[in-house]
Length: 482
Image 1 (cartoon, rainbow, N blue to C red):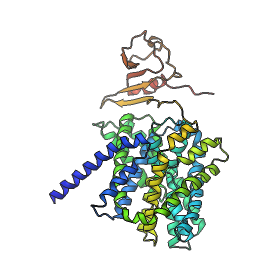
Image 2 (image 1 turned 45 degrees about the vertical axis):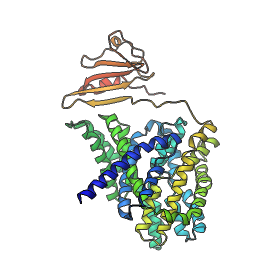
Image 3 (image 1 turned 45 degrees about the horizontal axis):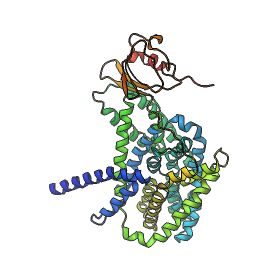
Image 4 (image 1 turned 90 degrees about the vertical axis):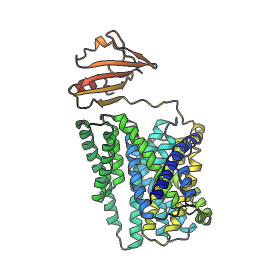
């Protein structure tokens, strides 16, 4: 038994290290890392027999909770605010149109009933947050487009989950009424949104009020809140995934202590969950079964990429100000990933007649989407002249509570439109309790004096008591335009 445990631990260590190192390869070619993780699982499946669908689904849902939470925290509300409208239409109408077009094609190509064809369409109807975030992260694609894609990928999973579960229920119980399904959809989305907002506000308040003995406990606390958000929403029969994404948005766009520490922890934890999730999903696939559906899978993948997704995007964005080139890139960047594969386990657990067929075809569709679309997004953006020379702005403010003391240590990136930009420190009439301790300028440390001018681009370190937090923040608050 001890030997078996040691062997499993060594295997997990090898998988983690291979997964981390493979991200370097994937980023170089623009391919989502999920391809390499899944490949590792498929290779292992030749030596390890694994067919626990229930465990895989549980692990997949937990991983999606962490991934969506981390994606929400990374998303700037200021960036997505101008594109909330098109993103929501893409995540609702877009998923419906994709489901319809792919479902119709699947009915004839796979030789299944039209209800089952629609079920297949719903499973592959949503783009994947993990794949989109990993491919677009660090790329110089126009910010408006990346914000639209990221907001869509974070918010369209609940729609796909709802359609998948509803269609399975419909197949199993044909007497299910359409009106009850529509009311259920409204309830799931509305309550999920409210739960995410409520728990997010509670989390912000408690994180800033509680002085924990170890800084490492704050990231653990946020993960606990993320899981609590999903569980609370699920118990209320609402969308847990939507609630988690909204909760992450609230937390990521609020001023909380140890913001950067929490972000870094969640980023690493999300990567670890991706590695284990995709390896488990790869283990669940039997490669010899893929050869029998390769043609059908490739045909459906092509229809999804060059017909269903473009039709969905162009219809959804018909009344929004996007150019033809921008719509083309959004259509091509609709990557499929973890969500469709996790949703493909639902028919398996429901013991539907074509459950295994759907899982294998979905798997094939996801792999081809990741390989073909993932590696060509950046070249296509450059060809369409939709790239920019922007660089990611650093975190504006980082609040760090100093243990049990009443003090906070902050570092602030100075922006040109901040009130103190261009001012001498002596001109600011600072409280005696607010102390500028250091300035980082052009990779050099500048010691602050009364005659020192604060320049745009500086990173300013400030020590102040918690009671002076609002006064300190007022120094850096950017005036609202208009």
